[in-house]
Length: 345
Ligand SMILES: Nc1ncnc2c1ncn2[C@@H]1O[C@H](COP(=O)(O)OP(=O)(O)OP(=O)(O)O)[C@@H](O)[C@H]1O
Image 1: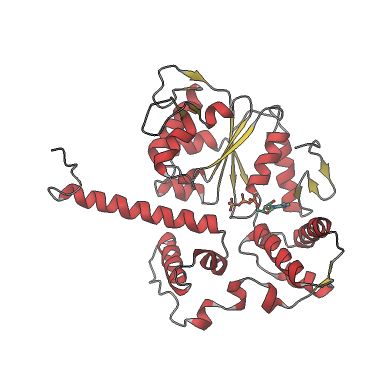
Image 2: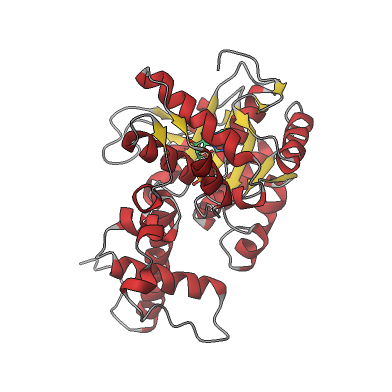
C-alpha cells in the first residue's frame, strides 16, 4: 500500500461507504487498529472483510511489517499444519527443503486468518497455544521459534452458532474476538450502492481508456436490488454491464443480472426444496445447495451465481459436507470390526 490510509468523504482508504452504518465501522477500525487486540471481522460473503483487514493492518503500528493472509477454508486439512507452522527439510515425503509457515512470515506484522471457522478443530487447539505462548515448532523441527504477530480473523458464519455446532472452539473464539467487528450487508446500506457502482465504473473506464456512464434508471435499479452476494456481486454486475454497453450502461436487466435473476430456479423446476418444519437452518441450507447443484448439473460456478454466494463460499460448504460425511463413515467404521482398521501385515 503506497498512500497512507485516511478518512475521506467517501470512506476510509480504499474501503468506500457513506452510510451511517459504514461510518460506524470506520470509527471502530480507527479505534482498534493502533492497538494489539485481535479482531474478529464478521459479515456475509462479499461485504469487504478482507479490505477491512487491510485497513486495520495499514492503520496499525505494524503497517511497515508484513500482512500475511491465509484462507483456512481453501487449504486441505492435510496441508494446513505445514502452512501455519512451516516444516523442516525431510520432515515428510516431499519436504525437500525447509519452509517458513505463516506464523514466521507474519512476524512483526499482521496475520489475517480468513474463514477461521473452517480450520480443523485440532489445528484450532494448536493455533490457540501459539497465540497464548507466542512460541511454536516447525513440523519436524526441534528448535522453538518465537513469533510476534497480531491476528485479525474473519468469518461469514454466525460465530456463536459456529461454537454451538463445534466448528469453532469456544476458547479460541474468546481469544480471537477480543474486538468483534460486524460489517453490515449491502442491502442494509443501499445508500452506498451508487458510490460503489460509480467507483467500479471509473476503474473500468480508466483501465479501458473510455468514458462510459450509467443511465439514471440503471443506477436506480442497482440501488433497489437486495445484493445477496453483496459488494462482490455489485462489482461483477457493473463489469458485466460495462462489457455489454457501448456508452451508457442501461437497464437491460435480463442481460446484465446474474443467473438467479434471469432464470429463477422455481420457474425452471417447480419442485424446489422441501424443508420440513423443525429442520435446522444448516440442514435447510444444505438441502438448498444440493438441489441447486443438481439443477445446475453440477456446474459449481453457475450454482454459486444462482445461490448468490461466491464460488469460494460454495466450495467451503461442499468441503464441510464432505468432511462430515467422512467423519460419519469413520464413526460407523469404528463400530464394525475390520472396517477403518489399518492393515498392518
Ligand atoms: N466498501 C468497499 N469499498 C470498495 N470495494 C469493496 C468494498 N467492500 C467490498 N469491496 C470489493 O468487493 C470485493 C469483495 O470484497 P472482499 O473480498 O473483501 O469480501 P469478503 O467479505 O472478504 O468476502 P468472502 O467472505 O467471500 O471472502 C472485493 O473486490 C473488494 O475490493
